[in-house]
Image 1 (cartoon, rainbow, N blue to C red):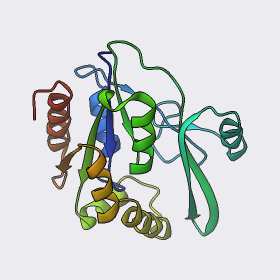
Image 2: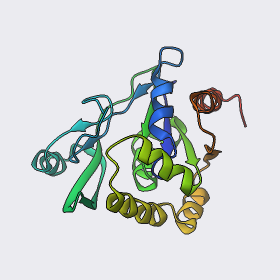
Image 3: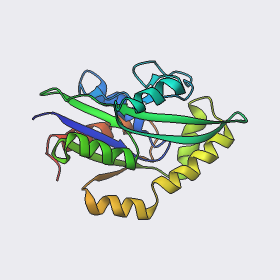
Image 4: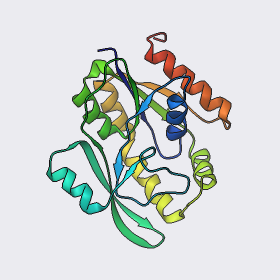
Length: 202
């Protein structure tokens, strides 16, 4: 199969979604694997493009019907209200000759690899300094300090040195730093990722 899935991983606000959108543009033509979530839609997000936004009940029904490749849930504090948000990817088959991109965490990446096959997945880990990530999060709207602090703690747990080392021992992945502001830097990263997908960087 000529199809490849570029798996973008990394902590909050490292630029995963923006790079994913650049890879989707006409020049690259990647197809986004749109995840499902039960969390509220954020400012500037688009239904069916950023996520499929469903109710908690609808998400739980998909789990019960064995429709998910992977899913996880997070305890949140959103503007003073505690809640549980679900995220996950619904099962589907890759189309011949189509290149895909997905934004996901380490545990989700394991499920994607197992479902589509390691030979069909290209793993990219994006990183950025904490202060830069927080500044970006504040600039994109709907910033809630308590929720950001929760996400920071969750990131440190999910992407701990031990977890990354364990993941690295099982899979080859590329690590790319994204500490530079501006669309040019993001476009350059997307360009490098496409080179990797073509097997032109080793």
